[in-house]
Length: 359
Image (cartoon, rainbow, N blue to C red; front, side, top):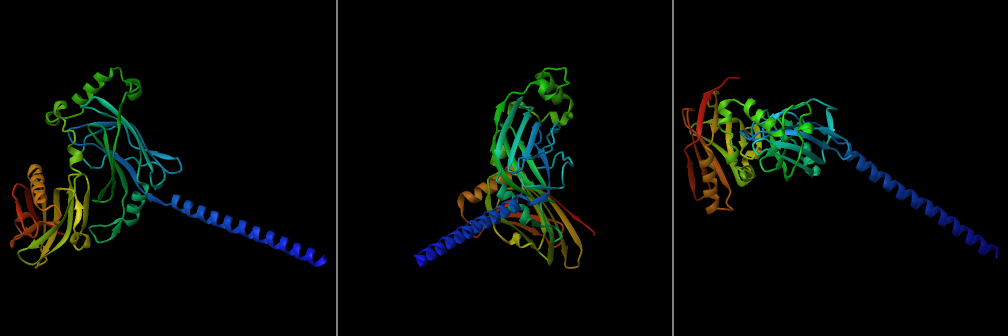
């Protein structure tokens, strides 16, 4: 009996020890998991919010905030008439801590002046994508790794919102979202205004813009859908050729969709076919065989460059294409063509300015 009792007591003791160890292991696993989650939440970057709107289509943010995973938030500058251009940096306020978590949600309400409408929306942001871009960064024009420093909110007629992450000459689209029409009273929008909402809108459109700008602001011909169409991408890369020996030092490409890149000429990304939107303008600098320095600014004519890309990809949809920029032997002129293995289309209407530069 004593042996059986001893065996039973031993078994009970072992069971207790096993249970305690199991609880400890599970507890450690939970703690480790929590530590990993906490670490992820604590990843912070130095960035600030800003906002923009297309030229000749003024907007104004009534209220807007970017929220973090912990529920805290930072406001997007409001009260400014936005019309500086699509994808351009707008008002930026230095507020809060320099290092901030990645935003997970955008809430925003704004007025589209030409439409005389308010829009509002709450949108979940692809925080993992944003975090990945912050981590990866980019190679800047000096050949150094850099990272992004702004999150830009773009407001489109019709109530769409585009979000970019931006750095020094670099911009990547994060996503596009659709807001809903809403009503905002003049008392809420501008508490001290002694005007009706219609009168307030009239005063902004009349007083905030120069005559040459007002001449291009027509509420009856707002190009709805235009900025969404700009987002279409094609597989291509820029290629620079020299009639005489030369070296590309840096290149900056701004695309119609608000994205951009600005990097050293030796960046390997320039050798890779990528899904890019159609280019709006290009800036380059290069040196010749005698180490003389030159630069260029190229402004594409919108209708021509879009027609050329559409025509090329209509025939050769899945064929990678190069935008070939050929610099003449005098470093005084550049010819441009969109080409692949079987076809080449000259681009003739671009405005090209070539000049000498110095250190």
